[in-house]
Length: 462
Picture 1: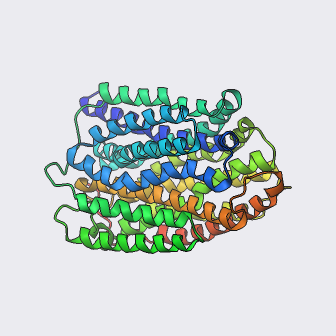
Picture 2: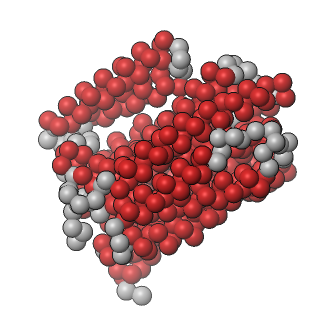
Picture 3: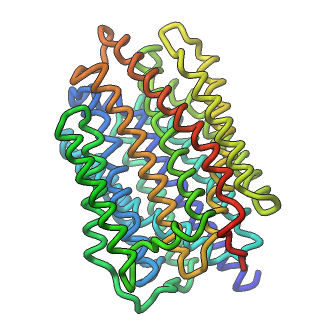
């Protein structure tokens, strides 16, 4: 094996293993939520923050850490991210109260931002354009492997050993990634070395996202509306500041002048907004409504990511041979169809019906993800790989955040500060149905965003 081939395989191994780590943690925690809620006596909205806090932190810090990776070295930032993520998992396992757990989940999200903001950029930097789709397919398949093992293994660990075992299970995987980086991944990537870091723009960006997302999560309170308005104004100010900066945190011109980049990122935002909350809601549904154990619920929830593994590999390969936006659009159409099948979810819905909905969703998301990532990363020059990777990651995490925001909004309207219990099951089902309806509307719009990103503005990959 040549040095170049060895480096490519090392980058692929690091990216794939880290791609496995973060979704494994997220899907494991979702299946453990009822056990966490029972121990700390949490209502539905507060319970949602165990998931939301990690996603919030990742969304806030992703673009700044991606830019720091471009300037100071992606491998260095990536390594710090794995250390932070793994250490926070240990602290989560040791948490003695809900506030402690939520805080440590927030720091875990910060570590996730360092991983998300640099991992894909390292992979893209190591592979030539003609092989990127295949490499991205492997990386995305690793994500879905994490999503597959998360519910099943997380359910087993929660059922047999308690929810703390879910966090402890991340320690050996994190250690494996650190060893791969230290002994196999040579060199460093920092195409923007020497450029300055926009500290003011970073603070403005983080503050605007916090205000927007926190405001969204406390709707319909009037304070929520005020925070959202403040956050949106902050994002407008951030765009104006960045458009005039000599060394911007985010290259605004990529959105203005590059049609493929803009629409493919929009499609990613819509896709993740419409799908992330599905696993969260179905985990609660299967355990609270259908009365399944965490272990049995986890085995059902693997239907979606298990199918996504194989489809992601195929769609990544296909995206090197045909226009990726077409594949992504077909994936969004299938995702919309799956969400429509969940609109009548209720007490009498069969497990077979849930499984069929998850299978269609897995097919749709698997067909969307690799081509969409290929479309985004192939539309920019190498010096923008870190920014493009972190921007796409921000779309993903902002989508996750919006998805959980819609879940919490529906919980607030239908349930208030009520715990999920036998007497409130109908309220929970009503909130879940309303959320699935909102997801379906979003996903339908995403079909058009996906297919609109080709042609003009597409960079010829070199």
